[in-house]
Length: 265
Image (cartoon, rainbow, N blue to C red; front, side, top):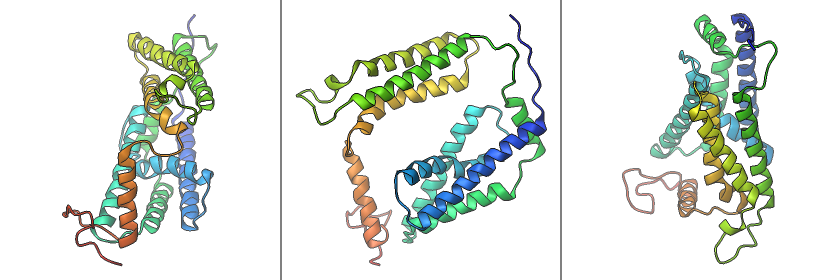
């Protein structure tokens, strides 16, 4: 059965994406205020992580003509990590360890950059070209089936996380205590990846989502269910962060554990 596709108007796509940008900027302002006033809680942690992964990078990447949506998202997250890491290193090397003020400044500045600068016409046309086209008479395609299987895998993984009891471990650790639904979820994700690799053309968004979920299940399950960090270098990071917090900085050229010529303030 042949379906009929419609062209998405550039103006409509531009307004929709602009609204999403403004929502992102608003979320950045909200997180900045929560950090500035030291409002704690699980809501702040989740929202801050999501905003921090997207907002600083999108303020930069939005200016570049990138066609693929998955590529834009990946570059946005990477750019956010680069900006955050660069800011942290600058504070450490200059002995100006003011993470709260610097984080708020970065969030407010990124939000202002998005609000005060509208996307150009070429970018709006690019958004329109990359936007999914609405279709008449949708049908159950193999791509839809793969997406549904991936959603089922995520649901099974969530159920498995609820069933795992990290306090009831035997001589062989966590692995024998993993419920069967976790392995079913893992099998479904692998099935989707293999099926997608055999498909032509490959859906980059579905492949990226499947790969990310596979990595999350394999490497995130134990870290999510356990109540304390399980990797030794986590405590090294905590120790270095605590050192910077106490003495104000470290000397990047020093190998001593006392922070070299770090200031004593």
